[in-house]
Length: 205
Image (cartoon, rainbow, N blue to C red; front, side, top):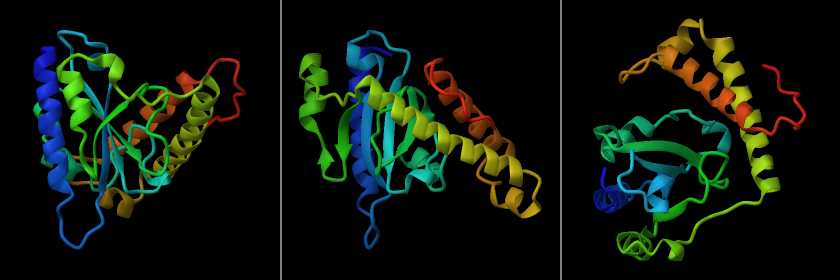
């Protein structure tokens, strides 16, 4: 994907995000949208747009690499499955950044599209982008917190995997219990690999 096209897709994505906040009588589910990765470095072409969305859910309901309830609707509404995107979900109650989402830039929130950011990207004024950064110590604490949550998720899925009611509740919309097991294992292992080797290893599943 060419750089210019990537920025155009971000603006279209911001417009689609804005549409989700217009549901009357309901607190917004989608809270913010961030971009990170290659496009912020000015790469041209880029393989895909890396984006992260914060949801109006508590952190325990948004474990790393999961697809929380309600997100299939967002994937369809935002056309994230039409190609060109790699997307991740986060809770709005915690920092969006982590070991994988580094230096993210917010381009949309419930207050509206951040035209200053999108204009800076369009003009390749990359140094002007308001990136969110974390110190190494903050990043390690975030990774450890995410890892603990991912382990809880993996244990819960493993414990309930053969339960008939659980399997029924976690099937539908093209998803099956196997997807939930894979995502739980993938998220846990990804975070485990992200911790420094010198960190205490007390998280055996």
